[in-house]
Length: 414
Image (tube, rainbow, N blue to C red):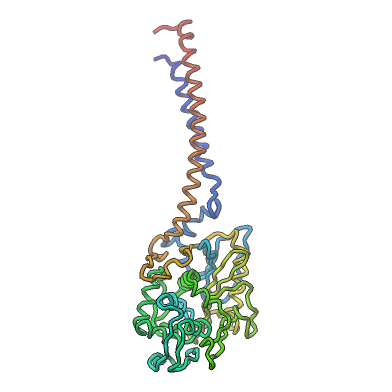
């Protein structure tokens, strides 16, 4: 074969190699996923599978610094977490999986478990058996024996007054105290709350009982997708039993919701549940909405010593979250839920793996979708570049093939 015919091959090869090197160097330089290119570099740590790379499994503050996002405020709580409810993005957290006593915030899990099982209009007459077994020092709704209450009245007692008498009454209707504890544990597992161990349905200090900021955030998020839960969690005041001659007034003990004891109400707060015991300290799940964005903050056991520290630290974290949410990178994900999903029929709850033991499907879905879209755009660009190189090479080859016979006739033979 004439050496002249190898020229286009060498030209095309060289051009292709240059194009491949250029494409490899540039790569998908502009990833237009939900977090941007800088965040995708940290994506495996932020929202990927569990294990050493999962930020939420690490102790201390978890936050991905960015030039246009300020660091979260310094608060004294042993554990806390800030979550964007619509996207499920966890914006920042500290000791998110640390097991701690939950106090009455555990009533959020109790409500998730029992609330869907009875009509709010059903009437139940409180018996002596309903009011037995209540621990001394427990918060009470003031239920009276032999008085009929609507189920809705009982739930006002749970959410507004954190009443153990209301919890015991509803647990009795559910089949008993022990059965309700088992049901709550099953619900926690179904939601993927692997840090929670239930020993008392009302959250009273009990040996071996604990939860975490991550799990309590799961409960708050799930509860707000249930219309009844969201209603009770946001109610500031109620008359119980409604319309009865001897009804009593109940005001919500969540100071950030109602504004009391020196705490200003938080603008846009929509619930969820506060708690206190001597062992757990103050705990709080708080959700708020501003300009169409909903945030959830969980705060466990502030150490500053202030009587309103849990509310003021939640306020500071919510303020930071609303400012940071549009630009902040995720350090983890909660599974997103459609309204009413998994709460109306608890028996159909789909198991959600804990992030420290298996990939978090919702988080992985976000990351995979983002990466797939970026790869798709990159492949289109690459195909276009290779195609242009190929066309140029083909034109060069045809030109050389037409020229080669003329050069051979002038001085060369086979």
